[in-house]
Length: 201
Image (cartoon, rainbow, N blue to C red; front, side):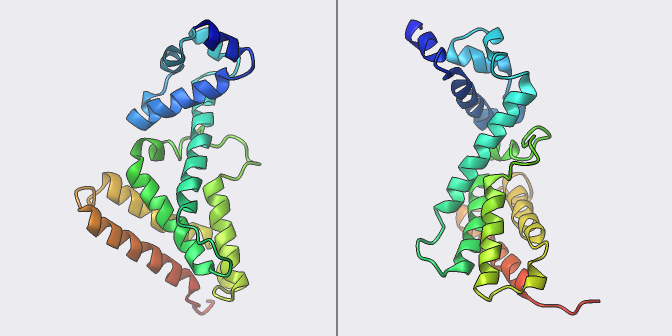
């Protein structure tokens, strides 16, 4: 314990509390997070947490930001290594989102919390990857500038809606093989939808 406390004097307690919070949320969702449980798991008193967090919402915001980073990492696992594959990059964002939601339901539940992203100047990494992929589609000539406007929202709506159906909705008992097929179909359909030009009315 002495060595642990010594490390906190060098500023590691905040990071340790976020990791503890991630473990709690991973197991039980955002409702499982409390300052008392987080501090207990790292071996300090609850009062110690207030040197780094103003309260539970502040800790939840930090945990949610860490979840965003992990989702972006999941997306990048599908990201094509070679340049010039704009469609594959957009596909990677969508399929990575769905797979993360299915694999980590506790963390996924913390992705959209009222305290999740408290700074309007901070763009969540998954959203940054989505906008980068969409801009790449325009650069590759696969998406027009007109169709690009606001395309983040139908794309995000499609994959988020499917993720909810698969994690807590009517698809939750579907086999993994079938879910993978349906996820693939959902992402492909979303991409085809934003790329299809329609008359302006």
